[in-house]
Image (tube, rainbow, N blue to C red; front, side, top):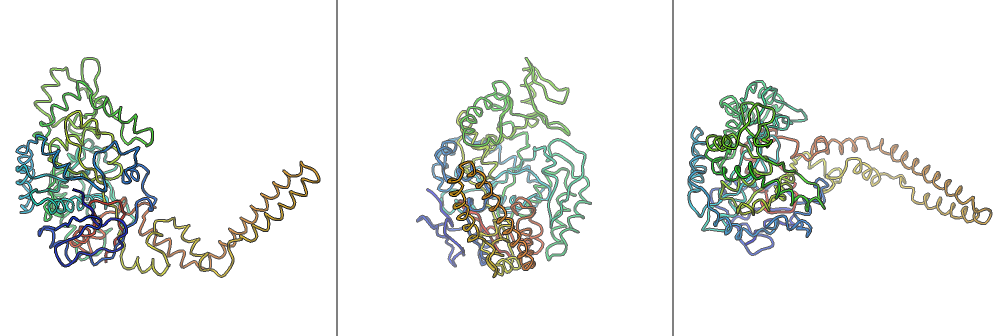
Length: 574
């Protein structure tokens, strides 16, 4: 059964007063469960529209071909990303043995110190039942959640779980945030961008970021408060940040607390895979990886085919496991008859390695090649929501999944949004720009605006034609006089055309001065919506929006998101 929700051609969406959202291009009716109706109803009075990803200019060809199901890419994934057969995905997952008791026990232990939320507790308990499945997104524990798209991934996962539950009444679907807390890229995870300013966590710690202690966060949170400024919910948010980062022993627990506080009311389950009991379930794969290097062989073969048309996202190593130590996450390499941990004195014989696997599986950390397989081994998961980069590396993994008999999930591209507000919309409309125009380069928009509104003739088309006609005649005469003169005439033609071009540029530059206010408005609008020339969601944090809207921000976003789509969403908030 495929789900189509707000697909192509829709300019404005609203939920009807009944508890039904009708799929645009299918007979399926999505009946939203009551637990989400309270959050969604009334939130869709904000205007929004959809733009094809290809029209934005911000997505690479692999992503576009993935959504278009291009024949040269289609064999690298199992289910359509715009017409996914969830029924088949569920059937496949039912056949996979999942250690549900171990999963639930681990989650209950991880949630033991958090304030209980009924929706979360019920979802965790439901994972013991064979009719319960998960939909999942994964992300590292960026400080203060990092980028806006982190929030979008979380909410899209929540929305998809609700939609699937409505579509399959006999099943239950739990939204899961899989925390990539073993990532060691502090440079990427330790900074946020707020109101044009980059705030960075200053620490000398190294290794898995999730295991780092949140030292120095008192000062960092003060910087966040000063940078955010006033908002109705600012004090409440700052208090939450302090509770999260000053009240926990490491970043992964702080992130768990923060995400639970923000999204727990929707039933979101946060999973920290850096857990000995969960890693123990992965020992057979890790053992084979260490001895036989299976993933390297399988993924390399896939990459050879994929790289004929696309840039490869992730290259496998002979052993795609790291070793976790205090303050370090280092690669494991095979040297002769022993296994060594790079940049350390640690090494293992075959017997010692097996003993270490059995005693401390939590010390072994899968890299990007093996992470997804670990996720799908421990979760009864049917769908994974990821960004373009994540989708790219998942496309390398299908043969690896087949090798281990693990069903490949439905892959869905995460929703992308551009948030605007009433002042920005007013400015856009006064400038006569369409929503699609916003994605064009500022200079292109300025030139077009001036050419459209000036009374002067800035495009010297007639003059160009006159030059061409004149030199056609001159070259004809040169041909008759001396054929060697034709080249000279052609060179003079180019000089004349360049001169006309320079004049045209000067005319436009002079005319722009008459529209200085409008051109500056265009630049400011672009800077506001596309900070540093980037998509807003890839640069900004959710907090500048949250301090004014509070929890209602997430309700509005949840209502606007489209779990299965090939469209970019532009949403006006406030």
